[in-house]
Length: 270
Image (cartoon, rainbow, N blue to C red; front, side, top):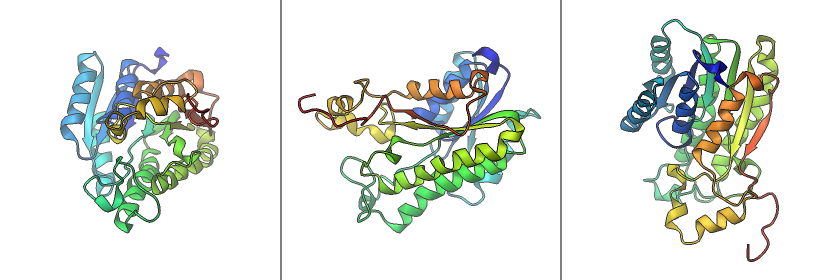
C-alpha cells in the first residue's frame, strides 16, 4: 500500500494509544501526519519524534476540542503545516470517556458508569469531543480535503455490546450514523467515509484496568473470538487499509475491528 507516499493526514487524538499507532502507521507509508492532541504535549512530541526517528514526517497540533475557538487554532496550524498541499486523509479518533478526577463520573475500574452516575458536565464533555468535535473537524476539513480523499471515524464495539459505558456508547453511535450519510453526500467527489469499531484494546489509557484487575486479561481474551487482547497496531492497520487505494470501492461501512468480541456467549470454563 505504498501509494500513500506523499499524501497528508490529520489524526485527532494522536498523542498516545490507538491514535499514536495510527499516526505512526500512516507515516510509515510515507504520509505527512498532523498529530493532533488536546492536553498531552509531551506525548504528542514523542509520537512525532518516533515518526521522525523511523524516517517519517509529522508535526504536532494542539487544540482542545471542548473549546469554542479550538477549530480556528487547529486549522490555522494544519494549513501552515500542509504548506499549500491538500489534506488527503482525516482520521477522527479523539475521544474521552470521562474526567478521571471526577469520582461521580467514574467507576472503580475507570469506566464511565451508567445513567445514575454520569453528571451533566461529563455528559456534555463526552459529546463535545466525541460528537461535536468529530462533526465540525470534518466540516472544516472538507475545503482542504482533495477529491478521492479518505475520512475514517473511530467508533467502538460498545455500540453493539451492552457494556457499562452508556454516554460513551451513545456518542460513538452518533459516528456510526454519520458515516454512511456523509459517504453518500461526498461520494460524488470520490471521497470515501468509513467507520472502525475497535473492541477492548490493550495499550490505551482507558484500558489500564486490564492489568490492575486480576483475571481481566484472561476474561476479555476469552470473550473474544481470536482469544487475545486487541492492540493499537491492530486498529492502525485497518485504518491504513481503508486509507489506501485498495479500499477505493469501500465506503459508508462500519468495520468491526474487535477480534470478534462478544460474538456469542462465552461457555463456562473458557
